Image (cartoon, rainbow, N blue to C red; front, side, top):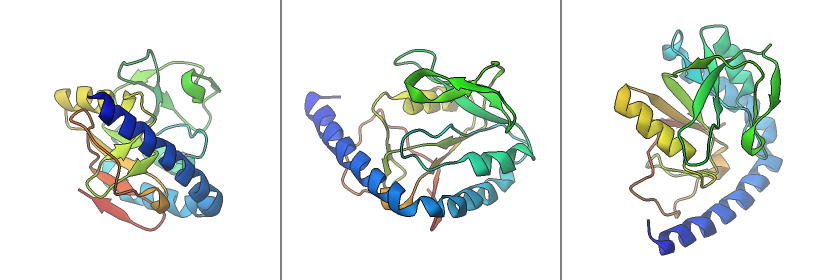
Length: 189
């Protein structure tokens, strides 16, 4: 990736963070609607291992959906093991004891690694082509590339509808999502 592309992504990311902050403050009351849509959309995957995430900053909260999904099968959360490496996933339940982890994300105190079949992916912004703008570390892109090289993995972005952006740059390293769920719609790619 060229420096120009990195600079354009950094500029877009800064704008997207500001936009997500405004949207989160305005729409956080709709996160429950989005979570219900997410759990309903993932019903065909009951019995598969579904990885959610522990929300940080102004990310939309997937925990209500994860609680619902945990009644139907195994749920996991991502673990950052090292910079510039794919994520690992540990089992999670609503009763799991949580401790602080890397990059501000909470993680299970007791590690029980699993390989997910479905990933609920946080994002800073998304577009209708299924691309996401993340935090810039490449964790999910590396993880999806690695998992998809080994097996079929379904990746669904989870966001507020106000996080949609049409003008952020993408590169050959960006791994597209299969679907995106917001409080107002579900669309598949």
